[in-house]
Length: 84
Image (cartoon, one colour):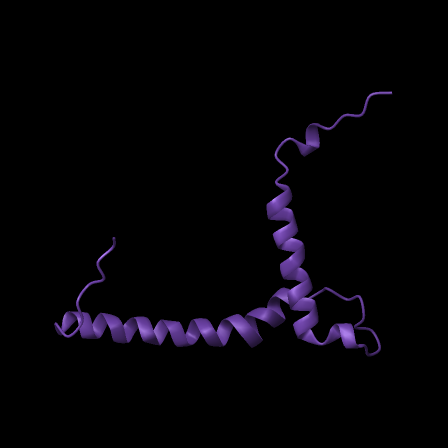
């Protein structure tokens, strides 16, 4: 019997492992691994929770840092970065 493995043609093992590792990070950070009724093993909503609790505040702060950098550059108080 020959197995059809065409569905694996574009499979990227490293990328899939990174997804799984990040999913586990979000799960651990959510506190769900510690227990509680209805949360152990529940991965639903992890991305939204991560965006609101971790990524959202960081990206909000970066947005305002970027605005400040643009303002300083436009006022001539900030030189552009030199790429080497």
